[in-house]
Each structure stands twice: as structure tokens, then as C-alpha cells.
Amino acid sequence: MARVVRLHRFGGPEVLVEEVVPDAPPGPGEIRIRQTAIGVNFTDVHGRRGDYANLRALPLPIAIGMEAAGIVEAVGPDVARLRAGDRVAYASAPLGSYASHRNMPATRCVRVPEGVDDRTVAASLLKGMTLEYLLRRVHRVQKGEWIVFHAAAGGVGTLAGQWLRALGAHAIGIVGSAAKEATARAAGYAHVFVHGRDDWPNAARRLSDGAGVAAVYDSVGQATWEGSIACLAPRGYMVCFGNSSGLVPPISVNSLRDRGSLRLTWTRLSEYTATVEELDACAAEVFEALQRGILRPRIHAAFPLARAADAHAALESRATDGSLVLLP
Ligand SMILES: NC(=O)c1ccc[n+]([C@@H]2O[C@H](COP(=O)([O-])OP(=O)(O)OC[C@H]3O[C@@H](n4cnc5c(N)ncnc54)[C@H](OP(=O)(O)O)[C@@H]3O)[C@@H](O)[C@H]2O)c1
Image 1 (cartoon, rainbow, N blue to C red):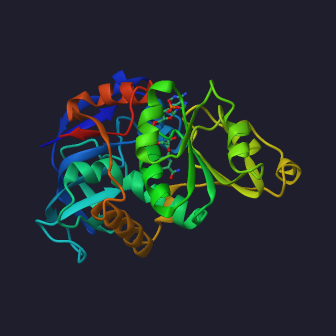
Image 2: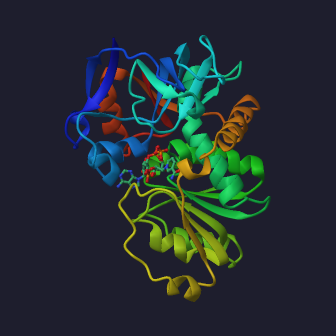
């Protein structure tokens, strides 16, 4: 039997309930994982609320969660990539990582190297892989470039500060409250501003000698869109990768011309790790960054699996800095 956190209706954190379900042997191409640490991500909150049309179309109950680390207990037919006893992790659909045990396609899982513990992996694989594609592939951040990163004290945001510092960028972090300033600074942001208190778009422009910044990484969405666009340099890159505050209202493509030949994208990890080769290369960059101490995930709290609802309540009330993990 496996313990699985599922929801029978979309809604607030209270809809997450731990249930016991029968084990199923791994099918062709699948491995069975005994999970040891589970990553909590803001996308899980969107899923639980019913923000995604593809999830709303599924029959209930559904399991959520996209990230965990553990041990391979069994392999199904046609699996060459992994063996029973391997330490593995994943940051990918199919959903259902909030569980003590589960089956996963072997091609969506990666081997965890020695010297990186499971909680660290659960706190950083999805977030770190997101940063690998954002900072190294969507826009390849250069030494000395001015960069704005939103939710700088969050799970992705703290790791971004560490990675941006290692890349030699001038990183400007934006946080939602004064209480998070110190966390963002400790993560590596040379300059930190509080949304709602500071005029951060003008401050970013002043800091970059009036030029504006090369790229803005914005996962907050509705609340920050206007300011983000306003602080970009001509030909700057507006990288949307989340909407924690709500969706950005429709915009005119002409505004990109009027604001100075801006570039705009809305990116998802799934499209940047679509092939096994991309997945392996992306995860390898994150493991190397962890082993070299470039990434040092901060675990705000670890909750027992049965308290997934408390983890969600903390995350969406903006009370957390760093990452949250669940322990099965
Ligand atoms: N597209 C992708 O590939 C991808 C992959 C991973 C994550 N993401 C996105 O990246 C973002 C960060 O993910 P995370 O898991 O590390 O979460 P997180 O940053 O730890 O938490 C979300 C943060 O968003 C900020 N926020 C602003 N307005 C908010 C609101 N109305 N309600 C709740 N939070 C609000 C809060 O920080 P402040 O209080 O400092 O404002 C909050 O701490 C999320 O938007 C997530 O969906 C996207």
C-alpha cells in the first residue's frame, strides 16, 4: 500500500488529504520509487486551486506534485536506464509526487550522485533545473549584466541569487516584504527592493546608469508586469515564467516596439527538458552546482506528508523563504 495525498475537489489547502491506495507494479518503461523527500512548488498550489484547464478536465480524485527523491524499488519491463537500488529523483509530470511510493516513467527520472542528500535534492532539483534553462538557455546571463529577479527570497528566487552571483551578474532582487530583504541579500542579490514600498523600476534604471536591465525574470505576473517592462533596456528580454499574483492581462504586441525592441517569452520547464538528453544535461548542471557549493538550498521547513495542506497554506500566504519539502 502507498500513502498518497490527493484531492477530491479543487480549492484551498484543506482539500489535500492523505489516503492509502493499493500498490501497482511498475508498467513497461516505469520504475517504482520508495520516496524519501518531496519538493513543494508553487505550481502545486495552482494545480490544487484548479488554475490549470488540463487538470480540471481529469476525473477526480487526482494526485498532485512534480518533484521527489527516493530509491528504486522495482523496475518494469523495458527499463535499461535504472536498476533497483538506484538513488533517483525527478522534477516532471506525470503528477503525483505527494506520495510514499509511486511509479514513474524511467525516462523522466535521473540518478542522484553521491554526496547530495535527498532533502537537498527535493529542495532544489525542480527549482535548479528551472534556473538552468532560464539563466543559461532562455537568456544566457553574461558577467556584468544587470538582471532583475522577482520573488527573490522564494524557493526559485534564493537559488537564482546564488547562481547569478556565481555568473558575475549584477543581480537586483525584488521581494514582497521587508521581512524577506535579508534572505534575498544572503542569497547573493547585490541590491534588494521591496515591491509596494520601493520604486524598484526607477531604482533598477538608475543602478544601470540609465540604460535599463538586460533581462527581467518575472514569476509574479500581474502585480509586477508593468514595472518589469519599465526597467528593461532597449532589446531587453522580458522572461515570464510564473503568475503567483495572477495572470498578466492581455498586452499589445506593439508595446514591445514602443518600449524599445523588447523581447518577450513565457517559458515552462517541461518544454526545456522535453527529451531525455535535455533532461539529463539540465539535471547534471544542477547536481554539479550543488556539489560545487554554487547552489545551497535553504529549507524553510520540512513537513510530514500528511501535513501537505500546512505546507501549501504557508507557501501561498507568502510566509516562506527558501524551499519547502514533505517527508513521507
Ligand atoms: N515556468 C516554469 O518553468 C517554472 C518552474 C518553477 C517555478 N515556476 C514559478 O516560479 C515561481 C516561484 O516558485 P517557487 O515554488 O519557488 O515559489 P516561491 O517563490 O517560494 O513562492 C511564491 C512567491 O511569490 C510571491 N508572490 C507574489 N505575489 C503573490 C501572491 N499574490 N500570492 C502568493 N505569492 C505571491 C511571494 O514572494 P514575495 O512575498 O517576496 O512577493 C511568494 O513567496 C512560481 O510562480 C512558480 O509557479 C515556474
